[in-house]
Image (cartoon, rainbow, N blue to C red):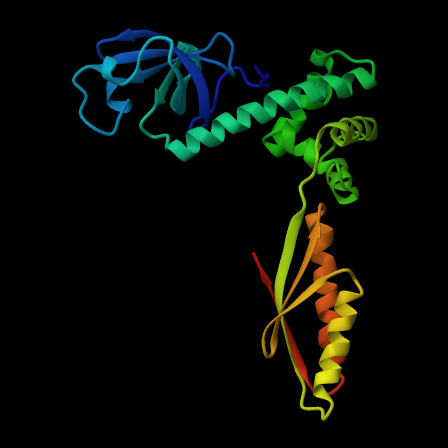
Length: 259
């Protein structure tokens, strides 16, 4: 299981665990992400309805996603809730765990490139990645673009680690293309208005951006890219150029992003 810098979870955090013992009015859970830490789910926090027998809802050996309600480190006491975790939250948490398990293997590989053990990699950068980004996985994704590398540097990650992280990420992660879209409106009172609009749209197409007619005076422009930030900049610059061209004819234009 992925390591955490803190020995105990924080209030409100979603954690995973295994039910190790049932009592008439509570369930004891061994937390996966915090070695040696156990938490208790009171029967009133198991489900959103009255419960006669706790065993109808949870059994020993069950894997659960729970929310941390209270932490008393001096008493080694952690109170948990099942009923306060929605299905969507539970699914998202399980996906996060899988991502972080993969990220830990990637961290180990990056450490090997620098001649370091996984323990040392955690000490030098792993815990910092968690602290600054929430997930180590996000750091590996971020490292795959120049702007992302710059962001990591601003967060205090050293150049040697940025290079190692990016090297592993480029071998491991396949970035998905994102479609950046928007509507472009172009109007002009010029006598050769249609030709002027065609020229403005041609300038957009030259940048590799697709143009589709919606209805006068609207056009849908879109661009597929693996670098969403650069794609956003490119499509806005293209739209601005088209608007500038049409404005020079006495017309006007407007661009709006579409999610």
